[in-house]
Structures are given as C-alpha cells and as structure tokens.
Image (tube, rainbow, N blue to C red; front, side):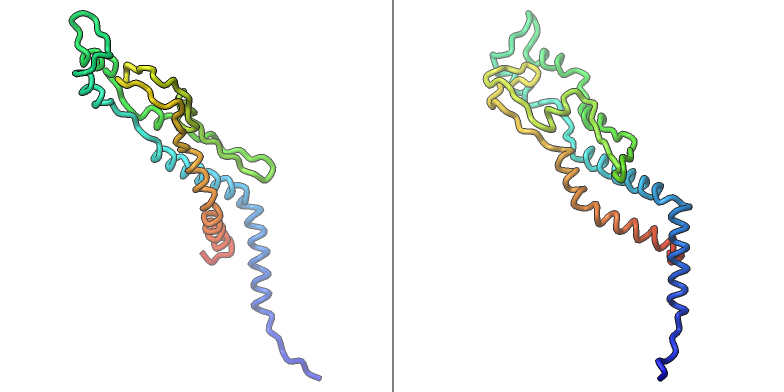
Length: 186
C-alpha cells in the first residue's frame, strides 16, 4: 500500500523560523519590547490627560460685574475693578495642565505599572470633586457660591478607561510588528 509522497520543506522552514523567533525573543529582549510598549502607553495617556485638562482664565465677567456690585469692599480711593485687577494681576492659566507627569514604568511580576500624577495641590479637587459652603463670597471670582458640592471632572479617570478599552488593539498591532521583524517578514 502506498500513502504517497509528502514534502515537509514548508514545515521545516516554519520550525527554523520558530527557533529563530525564540532565540531572538531571548536575545533581543522581549522584556525590553514590553517596557517600550508600556512607555508608549504612558506617553499617550499623558498626552490625552494634558489635552483634556482645563486651563483657567481670568474671570472677565467678574470685572464687568464689579462695576455694579456693592459686595466687594474696597479701601479708600480703590475701585472694585482695581481691587479685582490686583487679585488677578500676573495670572497665567495652565498650572494644572503643566503639572502632569509620568513616573518611570515599573515591573512587578508580569505586570507593568504606569503612574500618571499631578503635582498641582488642587488637582484632586478638580479630578474627584469637592465640598464648598453655599452663600460664601469668593472675592477673587466675584461670586457667591451656590452649590454645596462641585462634581469632579474625572480627567485622568476617563482617559484611563478609554485607554483600557484600546490597549488590546494597540498591543496586538505592536506584537504583530515585533513578530514580523523577528521572523524576517517585516
């Protein structure tokens, strides 16, 4: 009985490529590839968070309101508008946006840890919300507070969740590129 001839050249070539891949993974450092991916993800998250972070502006409406409002007490010879101008002199928005930073990526077990932090002292209040006293007058803004709670904007929380939904697609693409390069098909 004759079963026919088989050509195993394709399988032998695949075996060689797999051996080469395993050696390349060991030599070139799959860990380095993983760290590179983690750093790229961290940089992308930082970029998104900074883009989403609001930048404060001078409350020009408060200056207009100050002309007619009797709430602001002023010293002799100082107008309400001049007092507000003194409070807001030299104001430059964007401190919170500039305060975002990525810590170096750390590996714990098989997990890479990405830490994005903000050094602005008020960042947690913007992120998670804060209490305030209704009826309290804020001279710098020229307003009386109305609500007892200001909800957080969840800047980092929302962008982190968006990244979690897209991470598998990103990693699949990077791994495919890596494997093509390792197999010599890139």
